[in-house]
Image (cartoon, rainbow, N blue to C red; front, top):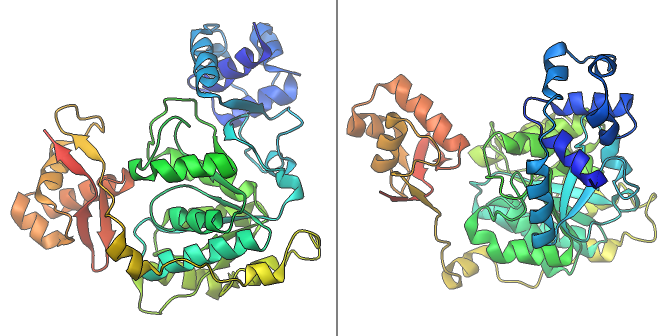
Amino acid sequence: MSALKYWLWLTELPGLTNQTRLALLRHFPTPEDVYYADPEEVLLTEGITREQAKLLEDKDCSGADRILADCQRLDLDLLTIQDAGYPNRLRNIYDPPCLLYVRGRLPAFDDEASIAVVGTRDCTPYGVSCAEKLGYGLAAGGAVVVSGLARGVDSAALRGALRAGGTVTAVLGNGLDVVYPPENQYLYEDVAAAGALISEYPPGTPPEAKHFPVRNRIMSGLCLGTLVVEAPARSGALITAGTALEQGRDVFAVPGPIDAPASVGCNRLIRDGAGLVSDAWDILGEYEPRFPDKLRREGARETPAVLGYQARQKTEPKPVPPSVSLSHNDYSLTDDQICLLRALTEEPMLVDDLIELTDIPTRRVLSALTVLEIEHLVTQHSGKRYARAVNLTE
């Protein structure tokens, strides 16, 4: 049995938290030692309960065999927390992943000025323009750009960095063989070719909403600083910023109009001490003394020679939304959620109109919309208006 099989057995064993796995790896030299340990020895692990120790009695490795075969078929590398190539910058956070799946070539993060660029999926043209410009400037200035490959700001920042010929990394909340969102297929391939795709989830793992807040700690943990381009008052990007602060990393933000809902989170971050950013050197200048041979002021202040957002809107085809089958009900939707999805259109609608159309009580409508937004099946727009983000099939 290869050593990696034991790692996969430990990381995929149902019921164990990442903190429990890390505690076991502090007590035992390797996962193989955990696999063969006596139950009483397992109970000597700091913080472990009898219920958790009981889970380790499951020695089935068929799932590990399947994952190893998938990784070989997909040409994915496995990087364990004990490997020399695992970034120390990530290893030293509070809750580092025990195992990473990698497609492409992982940058030497400990020797790089890497910057995470994050923001809302439902961004404005201003947010897209800023993300592309700053992604370009960061890459042209010598930084590694890290993002999440989500719609909106993430994708725009990665596109900008790729146009500059820079090194990029995308951290996913799903398996590396799952392209999400589907319209990012070409961007997905470009990122893998120019840098790396990373995930702590095995191949085949779907993009569940609960994965993304967990994924954020990896993005900030790999980087010296996190830049928030555009974020409303409640945004996953603000979770990443909070995680960065907990990890002792720097946080930067792009200011926006005081009455713009998509900029509320950024403006508050700046008010609370985040670095205000108008060009990439506002960030890279902070790290030039540490990386004098890598960071370039001239590159960071270059302007990408690409069409503006409004011009591209007229020339590029509109992305086709993903499809959701109501008959298969892959998202385990409730009757209220299905009814609301059928009532919604691609044009934003007021909650009051949805209540009238569906005859569902207000409390249930708001609850259902919250879940649908978390699952990225609907998007919220200014004025508490909602639009369907997927195509429906029966």
